Figure 1 (cartoon, rainbow, N blue to C red):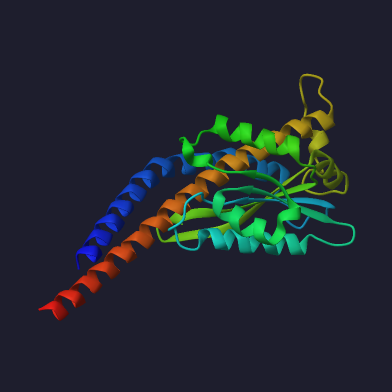
Figure 2 (cartoon, rainbow, N blue to C red):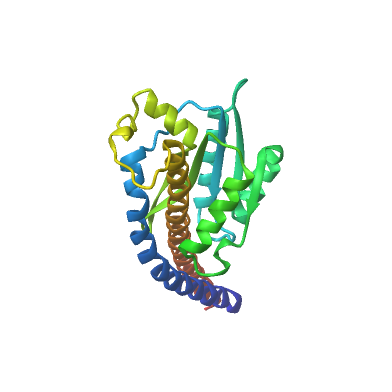
Amino acid sequence: MKSVKNIQKITKAMKMVAASKLRAIQTKAENSRGLWQPFTALLGDLPSANVKKNVVVTISSDKGLCGGINSTSVKISKGLHKLNSGPEKETKYVILGEKAKAQLVRDSKKDIELIITELQKNPLNYTQVSVLADEILKNVEYDALRIVFNKFHSVVSFVPTVSTVLSPEIVEREAESGGKLGDLDSYEVEGGETKGEILQNLAEFQFSCVMFNAVLENACSEQGARMSAMDSSSRNAGDMLDRLTLTYN
C-alpha cells in the first residue's frame, strides 16, 4: 500500500510538471503558426510532388511516458519511406529525438542521414531551430523534405501531420509546369536577385519556419499526452489503493 501511495504521488507530480511545461510552450506554438502559413499560401504544400530524393524528418521526444505520439510518428515515417522508395527513388531519414532514434536505428540504420537529440534541453526558440534547420540543409541532399510531427489541438487531442518543403529546383520545375507558382514572374522583385536566388532563400526560410512550428507543436502534444498518461496512472493507483485498503481491512 505504501508503494502504491508513493507511485501515486510521483504520477501526480509529473502531471503538474507537464501542465506547467505545456502552458509555457502552447502560446509559442500558436504564435508560430503565422510564420509558415504564408509560405503554404505562396508555395503550396504539394505532398504528392513526384521527386527522386526524399528526406523524412521525423520529430519525436527524448523522454517517454507520453502515450503513443512517438510510435505514431515513426509509423507514418516508415509509410512515407516505403511510399517514396523505388528503382529511381531514394528516401533517407533525419531523426529528432531519442524515441524515434531507438525505433528507426533498429529497422533502417543504413537510411539515416542525421540524428539530433536533446532538442528541448533548453527552452525552444527560433534562433535555435533555424541553426538546426541550417545544419540539416548542409548535411542532406533533397528534392523534398517531409516533416513528420504531431499537431497540437488539445490536451487529449493531437493530429499526426506531414508538411512538405520542396527544393528550389523542384519549386521552379513545378512553377514552369503551371503549378502553384506559375505566376511567380508576375511579382516585381527589388535588389537584382535572380529567380533561382529568390527560390533558394524562400526554401531555406520556409524550412526553418515549418521546423520551428513543428517542434513546438510536437512539444505541446508530448506534454499534453504526458498529462493524460499521468492522470490515468494516478487514477489507476487510486483504484488499486482502494482495493488494497478494502482487502487489508
